[in-house]
Image (tube, rainbow, N blue to C red; front, side, top):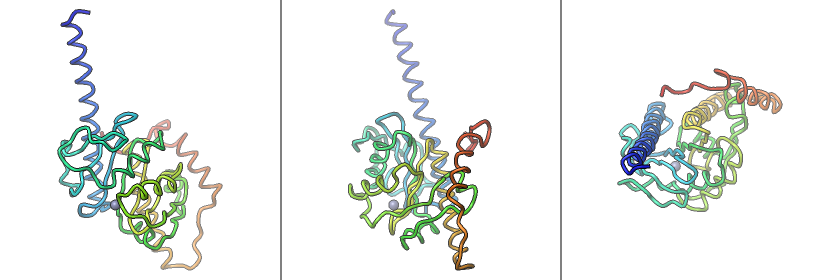
Length: 241
Ligand SMILES: [Zn+2]
């Protein structure tokens, strides 16, 4: 291959790479703004990340209100926590993100929120059970709570990974929510449903002593159906691209 042609292909390859990176940056900022507008994240709290490939992630910087984020503010880091690209300091909770990506190859996006109703159960240390069919379908399990761990530490990262196990979401004691997904759209959907389920559970507790939770077998069936058959032939249209 002549030098000119090989340079042409190299330039095409690079523009493809940067194009894919730009799309991910825009998507992450779009979801961060949406999460902020839906009050899943208040002030500068909460963080989001998305996997770029096996060893690289895109993550939000520390101390930003999410509605002010620009695609260029995001950082690229490897799964050892080394910053590859970016002008800001990353979220202090980055170890939690990198630990999850290392343990879970099926996870391509993580959203950590301090959303209001979920926080009530995170402080109380109470599991949120499946109560509604949408939650049962998409999440498919109750939301467990970690023991208390200090944010940003390796101990916190290990505890989160262990309690999350193969699940979609957990509560961190006295702290907030971690939601994961195969895509940023899915992680966002899970984070939103955890907050909605917590809200419903909170009001049900005010109304009644005995709350009827969805049966485990039914939750399993609904979740299986959602994974394989719901939406447009298994494809879910969650966000505009
Ligand atoms: Zn936090």
